[in-house]
Each structure stands twice: as C-alpha cells, then as structure tokens.
Image: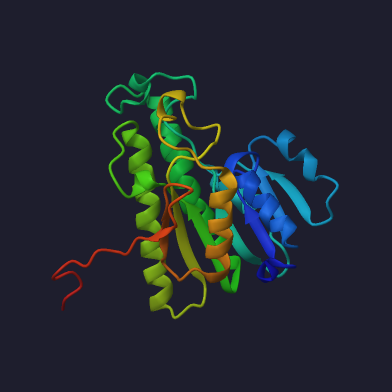
Length: 247
C-alpha cells in the first residue's frame, strides 16, 4: 500500500488485537508508526525497527495526550483503536448487565471508549495534516442494540455519533481532513468475554486492512461495518430525518 509509505501514523491500543495487526500492516507498507498502549512489553518486538516508536499512553487521561510526542510535520493518519468491554474475558454474562455493573467498571468503559476517543480527537485533529484521516474503532454494537453488553453498545454508539458530528464540522470548515469509523462484528481479541464468542470471530488483520483502506480512501464521515470475514464491508449511511436542520 504505497499510500502509507513514509507517512506518520499513530495507533492506540497497539499491544494486541486489531491495533497490533494494524501496526504490522502500516509497517509493512513503509509507514513511520507511533504505537501506544498501557503496556509497552508487547511492543518491544518493534524496538529494532527504525520506523517504529512506542509510547505509554492512557487514552482516558487528557494530560497524557498532551504529553505525547507529535512528529514535527504532524500526523498523516491516526487510529483511535483502544477499547474495553464491561467485563473481563472470564466473566459470566451477568457481569455485563448494566443494571448490576459496578461503578468502577462503568466508569472505566466510558473513560476508555468515549473519553479516549474524544481526547484523541482533541489532540490529533489540530496536528492532522491536510488530506489526512483519523479512524476510530467503533463496533457493530454501535449500530444496533447489543444486549449482551449494553454499556459497551452505548459507548460505541457514542463513537459513531462523534465521528459523524466531527465530520459535519470539518465539512462546514471546508477542511480536507477526514474522520471515519470502523464497526467490526466479532474479532479475535483479548477483550471479548468467553460467553460472547459464540458468533463467528474474524482475524484482527481483516479489520486492520479496513482501517488502512479508510485512511487512504475513506470519505469524510464514512461509517463502515465488517461483521463477518465472508461478507464484504458495508457503508452505513446516516439516516435522513424530515425537518432536521430546516430553517
């Protein structure tokens, strides 16, 4: 993918899953990549690469975003990929019930999945190059109600809404910057509880390649869903509301 060669790329949640797969896609394409996560140990494999840099980043802490080193010429492409679910992988379905969700877990999922994306946009967009793109990892659960984890579904709906709103703002400013969202179905990552693995699970690289394509070819405001490996990605258009925005 020549469009990524020598471009400055930022990926959050890069230690595993989609983020790690995206790091491989970007590095293979010749990009200069900054990889961030809460745990740097899994990122040590990139230490020998002249085109990879690692940084500790809690996406839910805006002060850490402000301290993140930005390339002198700004970012070309950004992936706001870090995310969590309500319960740990070994949890029972009852532990993801929003009516019984402990306050600390509720706060964590909102902090990471919503604040982490909002803070990432506040940090990255002012230094995103003209024609550059930011892609947020949402979820198919951000497009339909996901009863197994309502809090997760809520936060991913928020990501989709924020992307659409920022895209509209960029259009009003006649900016050439783009923001998009990817909405995967089940993906083989560590955050998925065992009880939720009954649906078909995709390899992370499938979604990583969708993100890379959105970086280089996605339209501003594009919301793309990929729910199964065998089904092509779908563009999810924003609904039209009669009377909305009318003078």
